[in-house]
Amino acid sequence: MGGQKVFHSKSNDYDVVVIGAGHNGLTAAAYLARAGLRVVVLEASPTSGGMLGTNAIFDSAPQHLINEGGIQASLFRSSTVEADLDLQRHGLRQVIADPFHVHLDPDGPSLAFWKDPARTADELKYFSRKDARAYLEFAQQLDAAMDLALPFMNGHPTHPSGKAILNAIPVAMRRRKDLLPLISFLTRSHAEIITERFDTPLLRAALASMPPFCWMTQDGTGWALIYIAMCLRTNSSRMVGGSGALPAAIQRSLEAHGGKVRLSARVEELLLDRGQISGVRLESGEVVRAPYVLASCSPKLTLCELLPRGVLDDTMQRRADAIPVDVVEAATLKIDLALDGQLSLPRHQAWRDDGLDLREPICAWQTFEEHIRAWEDTIAGRWPDPICGIGIIPTALDPSQAPAGKDTFWYWSGITPAHPDEPWEDVRDKIGDRALSAAADFYKGLDSMVIERRVFNIPDLATRFNVPGGNVYHVDPAGMRFGPLRPATGFGSYDTPVPGLFLSGAGTHPTGGISAIPGQQSAKWLLKKMKRSNGLVGRARQRISNSR
Image (cartoon, rainbow, N blue to C red; front, top):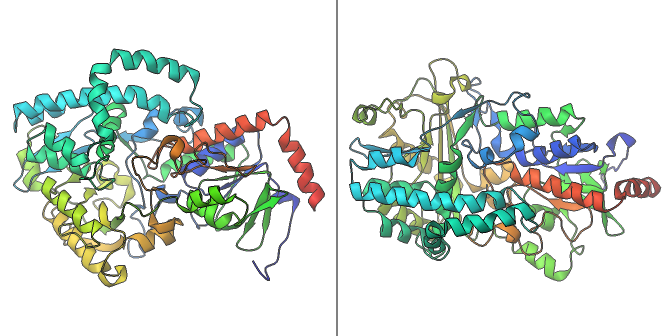
């Protein structure tokens, strides 16, 4: 800040500044603009979309569009965001990804997980009729959980609607037989729940690979299986044109109502006037004035770096400092490939006789035991071998993302060490080779058609997406960091102890991933607070004008 020129302009005055042009920040801004507020979104990167960006990142393959972060949506499909923001009119198209997951056995068999659990059970009968029955019971219990969870996830974390509360009571009573066994999901380990219920190796492996959020042998990690419940309830989808089509449609909705987006506009500091938010200072020195700031970037970044020290009282600052971004000890490994041809899975395709094209779904292939060992290695700081991950051919469902006859490949693992005993730059190529070599045993052509690749881990993710610790969830997905406790006690209502400062994004309720719900709910809460303040916007504008 020292020595930088600070200037002001009436054109830079807004009712709300939103920090971050990821899909949550854009969603919040779109709701606020529809309410008639003057809104600007400030994005540090030269592109919008955040971790849902779809961009041409390879110089040698400029027509291959790469999904830089998330790719498959489920929770988003439970929300009203698409309808509220009229996103179809603004160009959003989705293609259903059903099955939402396929697990591959090295010898050729596979197990597909469909939205209809009966179809999955039919496949399971080939391996075990007992497990087929157990899976149907499991799916029924998860469905009961969704009856209670979805209204809560689509509402305010500390002020749920009266209707949601009243509806929950008869649902809980009606489905109590299914709900009671799920209490153990909050106390027991992910691995224990799987091994207690199922025997089939392929089924065990699949249930270990689908929600790899936390150390799966630790008590209290069984909740991670809720991911499967969401897919069973809402189905999964991908965006035509790539994941970036979602934030692009939201941005068009925002701009149609007068909102603005500024790229390469990194916020350096939150500004206050007599203890209340008065705007932001950009890295360039420019000041953008507004009586409200909604930060959709990492809450740790907002509260511990952008907000000047001393604004929060000691207790709240300590809570902010303790927001976990690397406590789980696991990090994301993300690999993107541009390919000079099309991949196939001939061994596994030949085994199936139902017409399912295995190029289309998410696929995984490691065993249950390999997942256990991968977590043990990760927690100890060792790079797992094999690395447990998932692969997707985005161009299989949407060929528009690459030139005709060519593919892209998307690879992700959530089980690599956050604090490795070997520095990342020393092993980047080795780890990329290790992950892709295993994948090439299943995807024919993966080892011979690579035009260019990018291998990302913590340092790269932190730089590219402006997230502390390279944490793509903004806050570790630990069992007690949800609802009113996300991101931390006292910060779980979207508003903060600082008047005018609101939080949003992946680090707030309900969670990270593709949903847009944090953006929706934080904007609704800000609007409610504005309404209660009896004209605070007008008074704040006057205060800003007087301070010039």
